[in-house]
Length: 519
Image 1: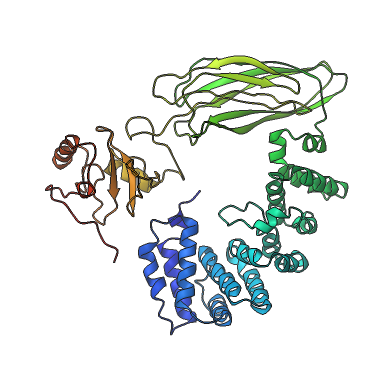
Image 2 (image 1 turned 45 degrees about the vertical axis):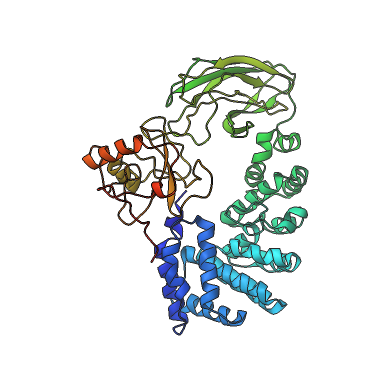
């Protein structure tokens, strides 16, 4: 997943400013010009909201004036495209809702449909859905599902998803689960894979809260299928299949079966970080008819609140004749950077069929402080009525850079991150998100929590233009520089509780510096 500044960053703000200036040369655009200095610490959706509010402030007046400016920017400039569409469409929807009236609402719906092909208007559509759900659904089901533009047809499905990522929820859709089914009925046979994929994702969203409705809808579609319907239904039922929903399993041909399961057996009892453990099992069809099986395993992770969450890994789908068996296994990898740590404690590996769970083996941590553990293995759900399955995998906990691997919160390591690690090897990974200080209260703007590898003290690094070292407050520095060693030695003798003044950055000479102010 890209970083927020790679989607809506300074370049996107500048592109949006050029587009609006060309469409409205007399506008001051003070808020848009100030946005690049305020956008850096914000996550993605808040960046879009910041630019939306800047547009509404810089372009005062009624809805018609804003819509006229947006249409000029759309038609006459090349800059209104990409991720700038999100705040622009959000501003259009917000102004229409504030003004009220059906004329502004209907025009905003039409304007969103004309802009969605440049990125997507699905996020702005949520504002109109929340304001007048019935009117919006009427336009979507009546006009958008019949549009010759596949981007508009996709918007009809994607914009009305109950759990659209990055978007606000629409309470009316969640309270009326069947409200969007007519839209899906009109699009499930669509000629565009782009549209059908959105329909499958929409169906999967509905299955989280209303599984029986989803199974009934999928059954209707399979009674009048297109060549692509079975694949769409399989993708739309994926969450129900992972949960072992009997109706979904039977709909895809996994009828109840009588199975005999042996295993899983583990090839080792402790696993180092970066290693793997191999799970093997045997499944025999002891019934008198062929059994179609979907064989999976789940890796269970312990959450911070003490509960468990599982991630299902697909193994294979097999059809077993009576008396025949399938034998095999899978390697459960223990990654060096794992997103969901597990508590270091032994746990049973479970293998389940539709009637029982069989205790099979144990994994134990490879060493104290490694954060390694296994939590349940459920290999093999013969989905012809097989019961839940579980699988085990270890992880590692977040920690100081150079000790335990830091917890990766988001994104992948880039060339820029590697350069930062080479410049400041004692700092944590640059994808660590800002967090609260240990003493409570909100973090300073632009600050991120750092675990000092030597002193185990929580300090905060302010991202000033000078790029001061967050540990020794000397910048730029290297780990072996004299300023670094001197300042870290001074820090190690400080009292554990420091006043706010004592936490301010120091220069290489040791004097306190005032935090950099936004221009």
